Image (cartoon, rainbow, N blue to C red):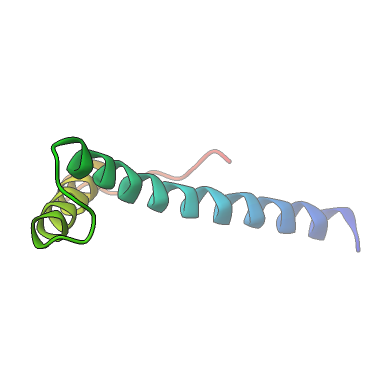
Length: 74
């Protein structure tokens, strides 16, 4: 394998790992929010809280309406 292919493989692996980590952090933060206020995991109230917190966090990290993403420098 040449050097260019190895670099592309490494970059794609790193980007995949970062994207999976980001998804997990939103969900784990939502879980922490709901359990910290007293909801038991598995209860109806917890499920509602978890869905609402994930939705809120995704809104927090999304681009504003009409905003275009800028190219990455990576």
